Image (cartoon, rainbow, N blue to C red; front, side, top):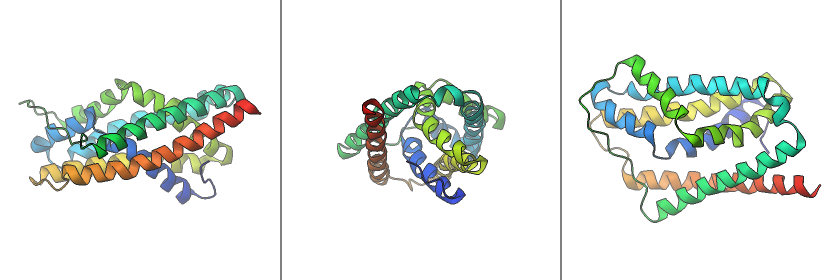
Length: 219
């Protein structure tokens, strides 16, 4: 399902898969927009660092601690089906929202509190831990690809992780830079267009997952 013939191939695949999830509006986006006027462009990278450290722990748990359980054929089939449904739900909602004009960048929350660098990295951790979708993503979709990467070696696992977190850093930094510059460089129309493209890729991956799951049932 995932190209594992080279580090670059895995990196690009992981990046393309992750960017759709990163673009979806949520607590992280709101926190960045809220705090960027106070801290500047560095807000995006700081939030991304906290998020990336937590995801490094998740990668280690899946590839080392949970690989035996997740690698069982019955579990793999269940994960493929659940992961496919998760991707289909996510991609479908994103596409419908974009087509109906309902997806917009959230407005920053009004608060006078200026958070320091350490607290901003903490926000990257907290917003992940309190997001049920984050757990579902890593225990289904990401787990499948990580086990495929592990079967080849350490470099594909590293490529998957770096590709994934690079999407976080790119979008969050772009967002905080645009907001910090005082200009609305990323309009809602442009944002909806990005969401539409990413949603189609997620729907494609959903079909691949579901086909794998159905094959596992019929075998």
